[in-house]
Image (cartoon, rainbow, N blue to C red; front, top):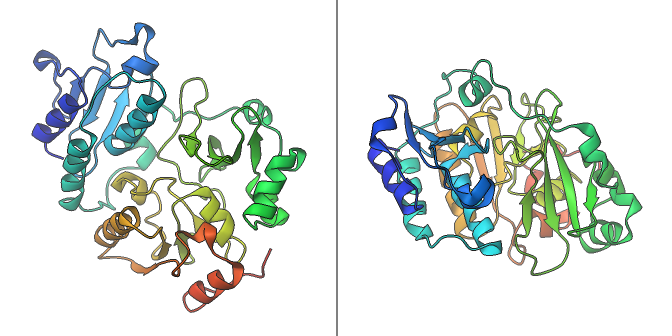
Length: 329
């Protein structure tokens, strides 16, 4: 995204961009999340920065420690604003700027190490403590979690165990631990069980931090084999019944930096949701990986919005011609 459009997007988000504090590689501004995450609801000394880079640019707040792409920031702001209204924003205008930047960007496979690029040589991503995860009971211990996963969604107990699913008994969500390539616990992604719950999906914070750049599946995926890419955790659980090399960016339209984390996998098969969100994701992946990868896009059959709604037989029929299926679990 051009510096001019970064500033335009920030101003659309009701953010101040002080001219005197700008940096060669970054746009400095007050934090857009300040009403929800900063003491007093304001960022008096601008601590938020957006990298000057192509595509959906990386953002970091040195006060509340939020980091992720500008697109992910806008989604988080939207979710928070529905729960606790603090701002009036023309969300479509901001999304349009990000989409235009993404259309004009390409994935750079020769850039520095992703964690060094995102966090710096000395800074480290936030590792969630195991004791925090243990505060969420295992899915087998909670009756409604068993009913939802096995009875309602058709997920086998073996798959739920393999994914280490937990339950949030306060918010009534089934929760998927997210580990990175180094097997470190980097997050927890929850899916609401009750219809109409907003937001349906929640990326949990620990000590006020999370790691939105991490994929669900990094800890088990084999990048030397074809990877199946889906949108959400329930899609992962569903596909895993027939093929285990599946991963999710946990975002319908992932940033280029996020796609780069999986770029060592040279063969991709996507099964994204039907609709505009899935169409945008398919277009981005095709463009980002067009030169060096084999990419096949599949869609759920008529009557199924996403892979999570597909039967084992439907998944086997769809994936069978492209990947070596695993025995059902």
